[in-house]
Image 1 (cartoon, rainbow, N blue to C red):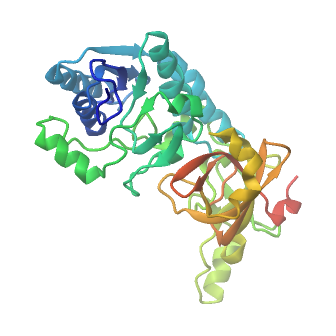
Image 2 (image 1 turned 60 degrees about the vertical axis):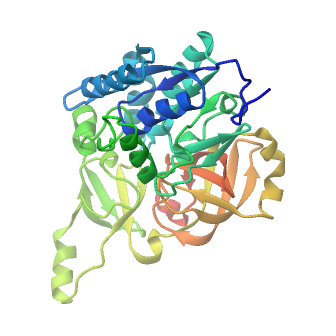
Length: 379
């Protein structure tokens, strides 16, 4: 005999819940208990630095665990986080690419080390407070479009999703806070964490400067003409419109013509020549790009890429960003995918994640590579 949630009556499945000390994972613990799971709260300690809230968050997570009467423990992943996430962050910026540390944190830490630990210790599932849904081995977008976090989870495997629970994925943030307050959880009104996963809010410019320093170079337009100077390619992302200096003659022309030059946007980086390439208008737009290191959550989709185009395929190039209609074409076997957009867009950055969707389902994703004609001015 089974209950409404599909569990056999008389059995309790053991769930290791990642507790961050925030309202989402706090309510997740309550909801899991309501569904009959045997919950253990686990705090992942990954970062200790000035301004880090790890100690405060750990105390909040412990307080919730004590209130609910569930076991609680701390896993020390600080060394692994530094190696697998922080070093990746610096390495990618140094290569002139724009990394996504939250994606790497989910892959290597939350659904890497933590997931493996849970499976090795006899838990039936891992749960987190992500705004996403896991249904029959498929990853679906969270119901709250503004909070949906499936973008950060595209590197999950189908086999993992059969052992992963997202208890708040069917709720909106407003509903989560209301339910948390109704249940008397002291984290109900705690502000959401911002910034990089586990690190929190930091000044990225200062963070990079402390490690990589400065390396001045030329700012050029799409025709290769030198128009300014930058402090180091790692300080700039595609679509950025500030932080570099234009030459005096460019500013003088603006005054001479009695008009304001339109803002320049970063559109590419020439790492070999240490050049920052900027443009405006049509020069900032992109109509296609390649996804390298393509990961399919369900590998059956590899063989059906052409069939996907018969439906509605969308791509997202940043967390919380718009879903853009597109068509896809396999390149280099299964490892690369050519994406053609239905409309030209700004902000496509080498190294950033591109994630594909078919309806509500997240198919997977990979790392973007620009296909701009202006590359003929680069090495």
